[in-house]
Image 1 (tube, rainbow, N blue to C red):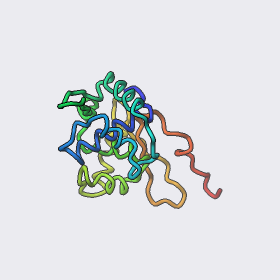
Image 2: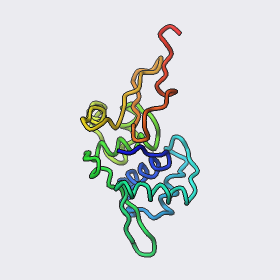
Image 3: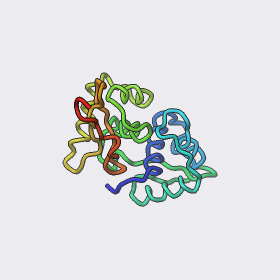
Image 4: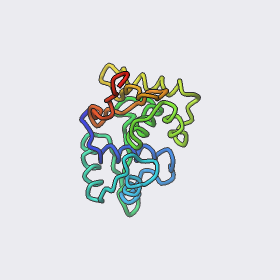
Length: 176
């Protein structure tokens, strides 16, 4: 799968999230998608995308068959086809969306953050879906990051925007 830019990952993450959290207004109009991309809560990093940037991201995602376009009344509407294209269960797609929207998270944080979209039974079920995505024969979609000093759990990051940045992977040597 081609590497997504930060704005493409944000657009795709918002489409996945809003499909589950506001199904009555899904597929989304450009205005509602823009508002979701620039949302100040539950986002890391917080972004300030312009309408043109969101349109550009949508067009790029549409060319890759990750986004579908439809006309709904007066405005074009946009939906995602991530589960179909990547052949993933909806639970895995939801975990990817949370990672795209919030950055690296522990399995426990992912379980809590995804609660409005899917109620995972326990942390081990979240870890099961993460392990499946990390061990895919056609290419990993997530990676388990080294545990930070003093942390009880390792964090997970998505790989849809390419390899994880070195500063997220860097862990001081033991005793440093």
